Length: 326
Image 1 (cartoon, rainbow, N blue to C red):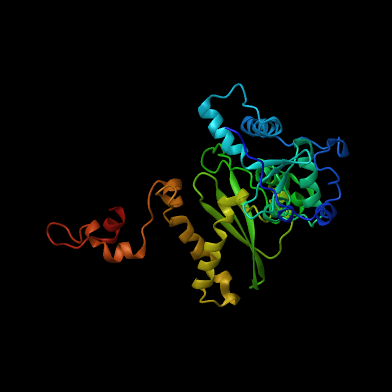
Image 2 (image 1 turned 180 degrees about the vertical axis):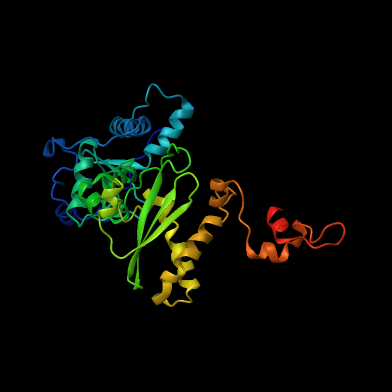
């Protein structure tokens, strides 16, 4: 096989003036002496293999000699790959479908180009940096290298709104009431109360609560409670108690019929309901896990009369003492 000379049209390349004006370091885009201290972009073995193939293509286009280490089948595939490139004035160019050919950038210059496009043009994201570079430049892993640089840019990391989440850890849970998670809820002022403090057992999620007039450190000091502050965006760090705030608040407001002036009169019933609610995580209620029995509700006594006999065998009604003993 012989590779025909490239069909090069001067009009298909970007104008030299605008080409070099857009990037201050492009007097020779493959001159590694401009930025000797640029850090190396981490590449995988696959990336280095693709870079080595580009060097083979460049050498092949310069000499038009069959690479001696390729079989006929391998050479056919290599020839097809090489046809997507051409040499001009000693530089390797990548053929672009619409005629706006791209300069193949040497590995030593790639970091500098990404840094200049990203840092000097507003620290934009991957799409903007990639699109801007592909207007004039090309190399095998351009997109992957841009993603790496944007992801590791220090200024972008400290200003980003999407925070990093630490993978959840599985804690070693002790026995009953061995450890508790505590948090406070800010409530509308009613009856002189402003806060609800609740503690939940790590093992059973059994709640203990108290209404507070003010949030201060007196109780924390008295009971040696060490305050661990969590990030606002990472409330999962105290999820055992944090995830129950919404349910507790909704139950309180519904129980007082959205009259926040009397929420303090229904809190006791809400936390009683929290204790007897069967949890999906365990299939049991906190009350059962603590006491070993389920509570009796009014509807149990009113409707489930089949649970106990109403009278003796001789039709004599049971006494109060016998009913309690039963």
